[in-house]
Structures are given as structure tokens and as C-alpha cells.
Length: 625
Image 1 (tube, one colour):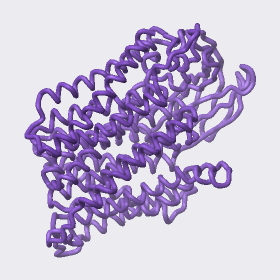
Image 2 (cartoon, one colour):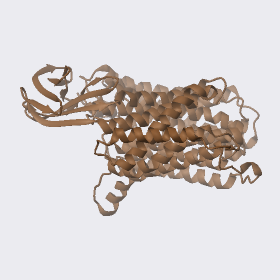
Image 3 (tube, rainbow, N blue to C red):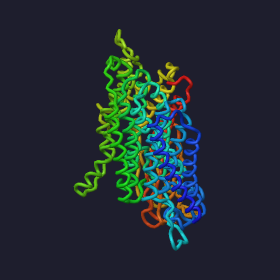
């Protein structure tokens, strides 16, 4: 109980400091102070420490199973392992928002430390906008989502954490993803500040691009970890299933990717200022919208928290205020630069980046519509619908084809203007070979020959082009790594979708089923008693003409709360994963068994790491790209 009180009073102290910083930074901006003194940095460090102390207090409450704390009572249990007691502190609504607040204060503190060379008015106004966001989150926590509410009388036992959240990958997935989400706030604050100060220029682009890269890398890795977790923990058997909460993390990632490319144009040629501002505002807006959709419980997903209209209304109102403010500032302070430099030639690097942005915005729009459309249908006609892969495949794949082709040639354009003296017949010949190769790969499948052949050919052509660029463009190594990672990602997805196989049947111990050139034998079942669950581990033997492997999927029966989960067994190789998962059907006798072969799964994960690696290389490269 003492730790809860310490955490709560630390929150109140942080809120008071935030309110002070809000007015002080605005007043300093108006009075045109010459520097940010050490006293202000000290105050901001106290603010960061107060939120950190509050967060540590919550973790301590989880560690000692202090069930006088309502958050601990709702999300923990004495039998839960220590590791999951710690991760459980942010595996719930209140704790996750406290983590959000901690990252918000950390980012503005780091910004002040590492932006000493930037104009003083720009720094003060960035502090003001960031403190405006921080103050809103303080109010949100204190008024609607206090993680330190007390329960009297004190319960003897807690309700426990959702078992599917008790996983190492999910323990580190939220903090990394939040670094990506919350990082968009500093981009938003810095963009509005530069807009008001009228210093949206090449120097500012170079400065804010570092923060954008850092945010983009964290968001990429966070999405990757969530995808890996869903793959082996939820038993979906794939890397992406267009789950609504997956989508709300993908939307700001698409926007961030477009922003990164636009900042490159602004840095090199001082162009696309308004578009850069729009993307900066939109990226943060989509991050906040994702928070609203998840925290309000509107989305129907395994990731979402309990429905609470009061919380949803607060976030929606706060988001509306921030967006309304940013729109007013944008139209009030945007520069109408109509000089000759703004004329972009059709065949230039600038045009290729702009076209890249158009495609990104289209993909973003499709994902956004697919995510929120079911919500509107439910509100309007009270009918639940779900939008799955067929919707996205039909709308995305036809536009992915020109996107991949353009991505193959766009990075080779020169800045300002590119002169084409002759047709590159070698490239055309290579593309025809790629189309032919794609046709021979796809012709015996059930896929549509025309679209699939062109899509496959474009993917192979992009892959070969990025491989060549990887070894040729030594000065643009970061870009080449990310583009190569993306081409490998698309190619891995293509082969994964073409060559995946699945077998599903209800099986008893001792039964055997034939599937294509393999047989699946259910050999035995063993029971183990763990600290907080009972484990049923099956032994399956997968036999083909060349070899046999043993696989051990598991069903866990948790005691607090009383929930059954399925743990997949996955054997990974360079070329394919063998994936098996089972669900309890009747007693401990009949199980639904699903066995899949998933080609190139490891290359999907590796390619995403390469994409993020390119961002890291660009961030730390001495010769800034």
C-alpha cells in the first residue's frame, strides 16, 4: 500500500511539474530567452524521475503481490512467475499508459539534451508542445486510469494475467513498440515548432530525420516482435493476419516511411515543406488514434483491453484538440514557396520519392478503411462484420506491382533532373526473364496466372535490382540495406503464400493420418504440473520418404484465470518451418490437430531485421545519408 501511495504522489508531482513547464516554455518563447538554463534541465530531469519512480512503484507492487492495488489485483496472482509479474505491470491498460507517459518524458528530456545546436525559440516551443501532450496523458491517468487505485478490504488473491500475455516476446514487445508510437510525438512537437518559427528547411530536416529514423526503427522492431509472438503463441500459423491491432501499428509505420523519404527531399533540395508537415502531423495522429481504438475496447482483438467508454471519450477528445490545434497552426503558418526551385522535373529522384509517397498513402488508406469500416457498420446498423485477407489482397496486390517496379528504378534517378540518352534494353530483358521465371513457379498453383505472374516477376526483379545496388552503391549503404531487406521480405511472402500447406483433423492417441507425401502419427500424451498451469504435451511423429521428426505441441490449462491455451511446436530450417498446434476438443482424449509447412518463414523475420538495420546504419553513419 505504501508503494501505491508513493507511485500516486509521484504522478501528482510529475503533473505539477508538467503544468509548470507548459507555461514556462511558452512564456520563455514569447520573451525570447537566450538559452535553456541548467535549472530548466534539472526541472525536466525531476519530471522524468517522478514518472520513473511511479513506474518502479507499480512494478514493486506487482513483485510483492500487493493486492490492495486494484491494477495488481486485476492482472496478477501469487503463483505467477516473477518475470511475468514484472511484465504484467505494463501488460494492462493502466500500466501500459504509465509506460507511455514515461517514454514521453524520456523523449523530451533527450531532445533538450541533444538539440543544443538548434535555435532556442524552436527548442522552447518544442518543449511546450511536448508538455501539452504529456499533461494530457497525466490527466488521463489520474482521472480515468489511475494505476494506484486502492481496494479495501484487501483481497487475498488476484485474478491473474491473461495467459497468452505470459510470454517472453510479449514482455519486451510493448516497450519497444511504445518507443515507436511515442517517438512520433517528438516529431509532431518539433514539426509544429519549426512551422511556427518558420524554419522548415534543410538543416531542420537533417535534425528531425534522426528522431524519425530512431522512431521508425523501434516501430519496425516492435511490429516484428508482435508478429513473431502471434505466430507461435496464438497458433495462427502465419506472420500477419490483418488483425485490427496489427493494422493500427502498421498505419503509422507506413506514414513514418513516407515521412523519412520526404525529409530526404527537404534535406537535399529544400522542397516538399508542406507535405513534410502534413506527414508529421498525420503520423502522430495515427499513433494516437491507435491508442484510442485499443484503449477504448472498440476493436475486437486478442490484444485489446476491456471496454470503457469514459476512457475512449477522453482520448478521442484529447486527440481532437491536438489535431485541431495542429491544423490551425498549419494553415496559419505554412509557407507558400513558389520559386523556381519548387519545380520538380518528371525524371528525377524527387519525383520517384513523391510517387513512393502516393503509393504509401494508398496502402495506408486501404488498411485504415479495412480497420475502421467494421466499427462504423456496427454503429450504424448494429451488425458485426470482419474484414480479412481477401479484402486487402484484392486492393493491395494490383497496386503493389507498379510500386515494386517503380521502386526498382526510382533510386537510380539523379537529383533535379535525369537525362535518358538511350533505352536500357538490359533492364527490359532482365524483367522479361523475371516474368518468365515467375510464370514457371506459379503455373501449377491455384493462383490467378496473370496477376500472380506479374506480381512475382516484379518481386524477383526488385530483388535482383536491390542485390546489385547493395554491392554498387557504397555511399548509400543504409538505403541499399533497407531496400534489399524489403525486396527479400516481399519475395519471402510470395513464396510463403504459394508453397504453404496445411493439414487439419481431429485425432486420438495412436491415430495416424496420411497427408500428401507425409504421415502424421499421434504417439502419446504426457501431463506435467507447473507452478500456475497444467501442461498436456503431445508427441507427434511426422514421417516422409526421406526422414522423420518428432514434434511436441502443448495445451496449457491455467488455474488463475482458468483458461486453456495452445502452444505450437515449430521446427525451423533455412527453407521452411514445420508448424504443429493442437486444441482440446473432448476431455483429454480428442484433439484438433493442425499441421502446416511454412516456406521461408525465417527469411520474413530476417528481412524485417535488415529493413530496421538499414535505419540504424543511417542513424549512426558518420557521412549522413
